Image 1: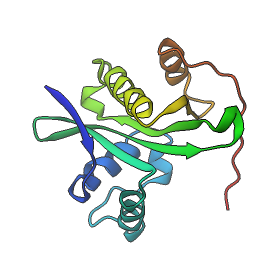
Image 2: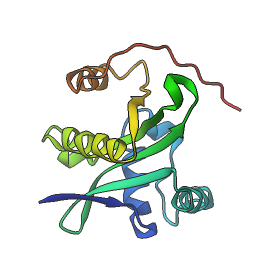
Image 3: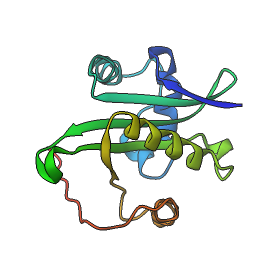
Length: 150
């Protein structure tokens, strides 16, 4: 049975391995052990922030998925809160089994329970399969996003 929970520091190797396990992540992540200090520092900051939720999907004791939700307060939309879902990954050997859909259903419920009136995400332009998946969940490609590496 798949369950969801807040990530723990002991989950970090599995989370980073999932982040690195795709063509884009392979060029920007380092899953070698011991993990780079930056991952440990980022986890500590995320875990300490009440508007951040780094979550894992687990099957028994095995971490099989991860995502991060950032809860954003804003003045637009009459002061609406937004849930920003990022860094969604499912372990390679568990993909295409409906786990991603379960993760999103859970994440959207978390956003509702926090009073969010909007859930948003960004996705790389090159992830055509992900675009179809998100559209199948009811998301619309309504905006163009920009990033600048510093």
